[in-house]
Image 1 (spheres, rainbow, N blue to C red):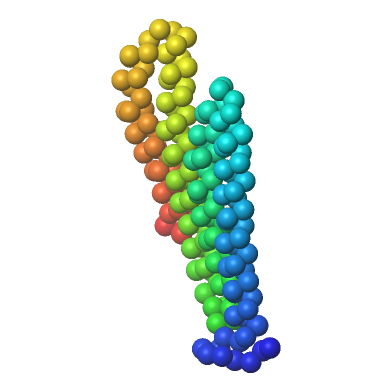
Image 2 (tube, rainbow, N blue to C red):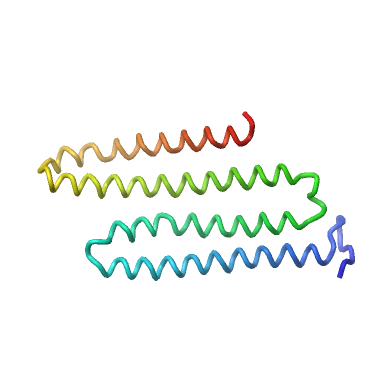
Length: 158
């Protein structure tokens, strides 16, 4: 089982890496299925459409992160990459931050739109608020991306 195949990679390491990646893919599929059922359940209720939209914004990012986690764990099992564990950890951290920033930017866009519609109905200022929505989405999105970039740079020691 520990026979070397190529480049100092043994059969056991290859099996572990493949298993970790396969588990990551299966978990990503499970996340997608659970999110789709949750969205369908939330959309049946008229007042929870924003919740369904937020679940929709997060499920793709969560599925992607699950696949990345499987690949990361699979690569950690390779003895060939022992000298590069720090780089792997940094790469995984950076990818995780990018996925979270992506999900939050998507969520904030829908949350701002929902909030302005709700406030517009209450105050009667629907036209004024609707004209401000695109600009508010861009500004908040850029602020979130800037914070994500600063966090990534901090993680990289820059």
